[in-house]
Image (cartoon, rainbow, N blue to C red):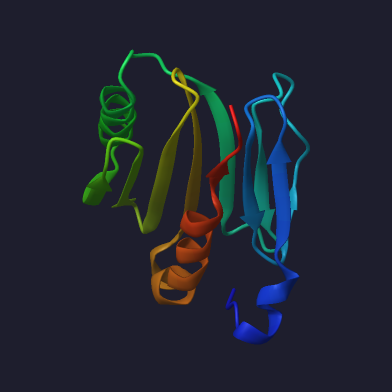
Length: 146
């Protein structure tokens, strides 16, 4: 999948009212419907090779950064070789690879004990094609007012 500037306007929007966050959804991705718990949704590319999962929730640890580090470690424990991480007290981004696939994750702090997050999984061969998609996802994951 290649997102050109000409079709960039075709991005959709997903807003979650339970946890008060929103994110743009790439063209060609279809949602499977909001989860039963109302925390988010899974979107898949037309060919099924790319999966965007978005959700919100309550922190398991009192500190955002500690909670996100535990999530990143959980991905590493599942076999993802984490090769990139950047963070601040209000957000974290990390990526890694496993079995020819790439994971890019972004989490943002929201309202004290809440967070919002997305995960994009795709084939390693699509890294260059999806760099701009990842950039837009990072830019558009926003927390609403508390």
